[in-house]
Length: 221
Image (tube, rainbow, N blue to C red; front, side, top):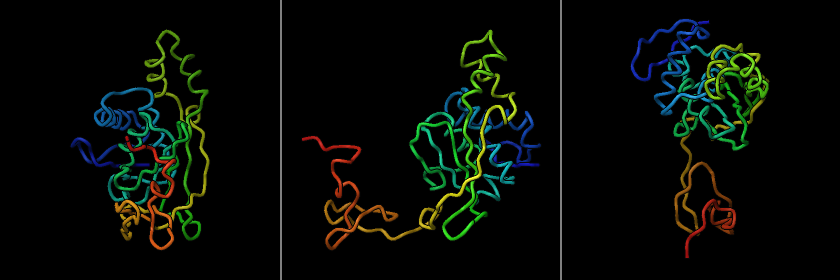
């Protein structure tokens, strides 16, 4: 399978097969620039996203196929930035959804694979815990991070990841580019987008005002 990705920074637009070392090296370089350093988590994230694109038949995730993917990530670590580099999914584009499960895993939802209304087919990929042991076997003379960095570049996908086809509820209001109505909270007056409110006695109330004790912040006295 061939893949072409828009360069970041500018590089030739055409790339060889997705699984080739040339493409992996290029994407790792882009991930390093975007994230600020290269580590084992970055390599896992790049390879995870490459595998997902391959399985879904997405050749240009940052080009002609850029509106096909919505990615759910389950950890706020290095791999998340790498996944964004490969797929082009960004939080600000509403194509990257964060679920704080603390797992090195992501689900790649293809909007061209609807199962029924507001339900889509996706591929969930999770890093195998056993990959760490395999890395130690391959490079016992290295310390943990360089050990894993070397091994994760070379190990086959089936030793790095588990794969599971899944169905994911995704209403139109959660799509990238969706423009919904904006309302004001009847308590604090702040604007609310994307139906993130509850119905008050007569007017909408934002989630923070509806349940002040559950806010991620608390006002200082």
